[in-house]
Length: 79
Image (cartoon, rainbow, N blue to C red):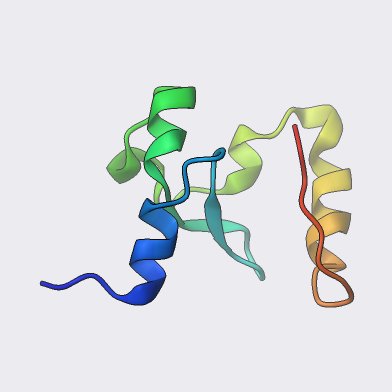
């Protein structure tokens, strides 16, 4: 199977952890290889889980608000 342009963008992104999320439920749809190197979680173990499982409980509502506002402007979140 060939990689799509989108797959290449994800796999070639090495500047930090990259998560592709389903905006409605914050389900992780894809990650780059840096996620496994940084968090020690294999791609097959993290894809399909909730991004909120990785967020400190004190920050969950803030992250939910940020995601809700994604359509209004583009921004990056640094943790």
